[in-house]
Length: 155
Image (cartoon, rainbow, N blue to C red; front, side, top):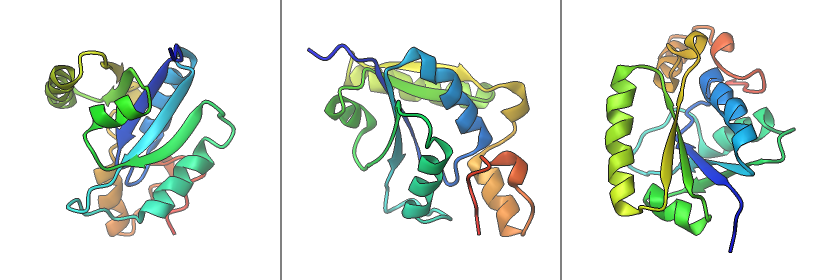
C-alpha cells in the first residue's frame, strides 16, 4: 500500500501566477509530492500554448523535487485515483471562490469519498491576482511582471 501523501493542484495555469506559486510553496511541507496538473480541454480557449505553460511551471519549481508537472483530460477525481493522490489543493481568494470551490469539492467527494479537498486561503497580497486578469492586461500590452513568477517570460 502506498502511504505517500500526494496532492494534485489542478488548473489551466494560463499563465501561472504568483498566487499559485505562493500556495504551492506553503503546501509543500504538508505533502511528499504535489502534482501540478494542467487540465487539457479542447473546448476551453487558452491564451498561451500548453508547452509554454508546462515550461513556465517547470522553470518556476525547478529546485523543488517534490513537485511534478503533468496534464490531464478526464475527471479530476479519476486523475487523482490514477496517480494515487488522496488530496486536491485549491486556492481561495474571496467568498465567490469559496462558494464555487465548495460546490466542486462536494461533487468530487460524492464521486470519490477517499479524496479530500484542502483549501488554502490566498495571502492578502495575492488575493486580487487571477490568470484571467493577467490575460486581460497582456492583451492590452500592460506590464504583468509583478503578478507572475520571475521565471515566466510571456514573450
